[in-house]
Image 1 (tube, rainbow, N blue to C red):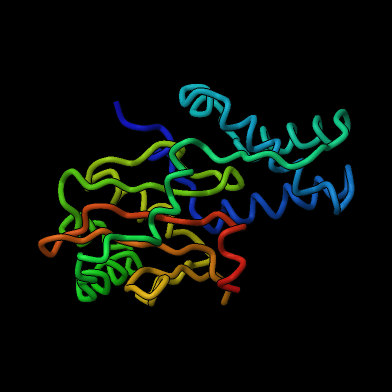
Image 2: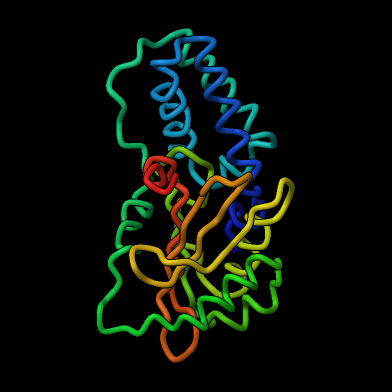
Length: 218
């Protein structure tokens, strides 16, 4: 069965716009100081839903907005909790890849170009059939909570996630001293990705869009 979160991919630009809307709503209901906690709690409740329940929500932003209002009006925020899905907590490994592996800069550049151009066929060719993508949104953005398996699904997810308007620009740049992908929207870094490459093909994509982990890039 296909993963409904992959089949109904929302673009990164839309996901970021959703978060901005929720933060503004939370600030109006609560206060600017408590907005981040309120929104984090709303996303935590979203991820507590099983995949079938999330897939049944026709308008996730409306669901999240209603949840933000419920939390903001009915709960006194406490300390922020770790809202990361279990799979996302693996994502920091993306920045400590084995030293014995070569960077394969050419593969990374080709992969970045395929992402930038929305070339699904080129992405499939760059990935091994059993490739895996792990996304880390830190529980603060709507991204798949489980690893995305297979070149076909990964290519479909990336073309949808990086597409849409406004456009997300993808470039091959150094990520912690190695070749990686940097995603920019309106001049701001909104995501970075590291690749595990062997025999000229991409085996693993570690995609980090967690806003907390990207602050240093700004």
